[in-house]
Image (cartoon, rainbow, N blue to C red; front, side):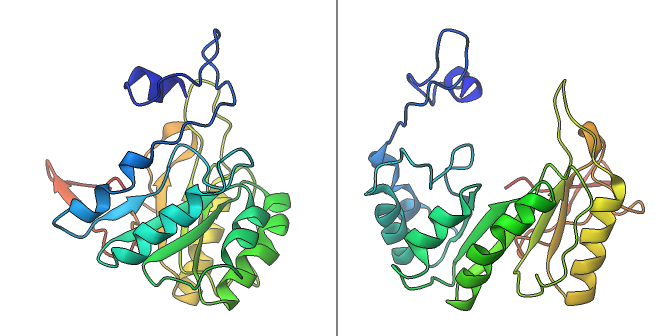
Length: 222
């Protein structure tokens, strides 16, 4: 919330101490933006918020869905920590869209267990599903997740960042390799470079490719 307010994006919604006040700010005028982009884009939907927060007005998700359905040239990444809400508002309400990826944020094994049914059922209904394993705070078993369309792994950054067990990243990468699931290593532990065995891996979204910058590979931001 502080970052968005500093960038002039968020007007209100921050208390006197600079923390999010709990106020939901809906800007429907932004919904039309994807219709005017000339080139296909990978779109991070409400990336610093949560589309399925309990205070988000009920008309927002149907409105967002309508835009995504009408702009199949773009690919949309949706991410939430509210797995059950995403399932109840999507799985049996809307038909799946091939250009939309519904994702869950997972940090530990408890999150993995909680996200299991909603993600699996969304996949069974025909939705593309993915996991953001970020921040990866402990090693997790991925057995049973062979139906995922992508995994993004990363450590926490910032002054008080918790460390990421490197084996957590290797285990996720090896699972993806074995099951031919696109994998991306987004950030190392506590802001370290996103390298595994000296390799920078960026496979999800699929179109993303490493670019050359001063002779070194860098990750495209999305």
